[in-house]
Image 1 (cartoon, one colour):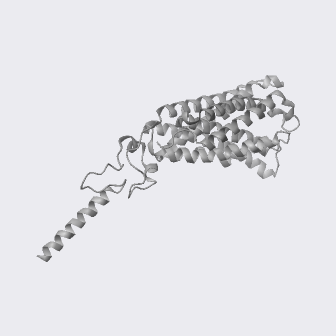
Image 2 (cartoon, rainbow, N blue to C red):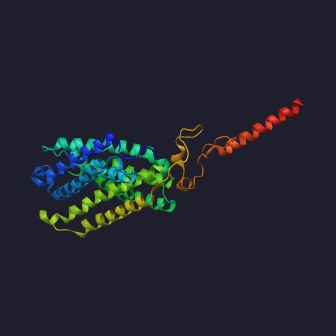
Image 3 (cartoon, rainbow, N blue to C red):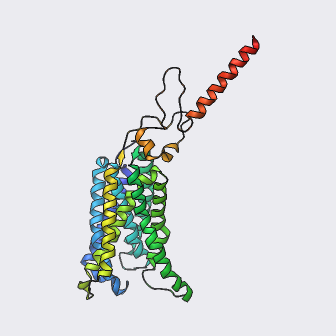
Length: 332
């Protein structure tokens, strides 16, 4: 595994995102009046629960940033999931135009979280995908769990959008959910699910990021239902049970995936001649676990073999040998 731990630039980014989130969400908890007149009254319990979860997520990100090089790849994946939550949560305030005096903070956290999430995902895949292994059976279970979100929310949101489209109605709140879910979150879950079904190691690495994001985000919805009595509304089982069950599901998937995920040191150099830079990403978990398809250390007198080409190389050498024997026979 190459260059473990958080790089200095990303440590600073995580720390900034964490501090800004704690300050911004903490202000919302101490002064809930900043939302009055800017969000629908029915969504105020959700704003409260989101601020509570955001403070916790921000503190966790600060802790990971301060840990620096002591952060292992699994903790880094959890941190990326928390960044995804900040992207989603503050994206709601940005898109819904919550123009209070903290709006510039919303913009800053939304943008910082987005870029840190993209750059962090690319970097962690680059550093760890070659060594990532996961039992094949659980990989399929994890893929099915990732596929659950799109299967639920694509039909749900589209069925809600079609009547609005037909009536040409412009809704005044929560339209950000359609944008964030249909444009970013559901496609990400879908890519990770398909990637795991196709035994792609990048999907094995990034799946827990999506599970952490899903668990934290949906837990915010469950908590929002529980605090409704503080705003004069009753708690309903229809509003509490589904997000609670989904939270438990995604939390279990995140914990089990991280527990079963392992990073085995590579026994070959990715820059050796004939080695495809994409071969490690296309290897199945079984191949990565057994080492099949990997380049073996070269022995004296033997040619180096690259993944996926050993048979072709042997055939070519055999043909060359036969050709040389034929030329020698004709010369005699």
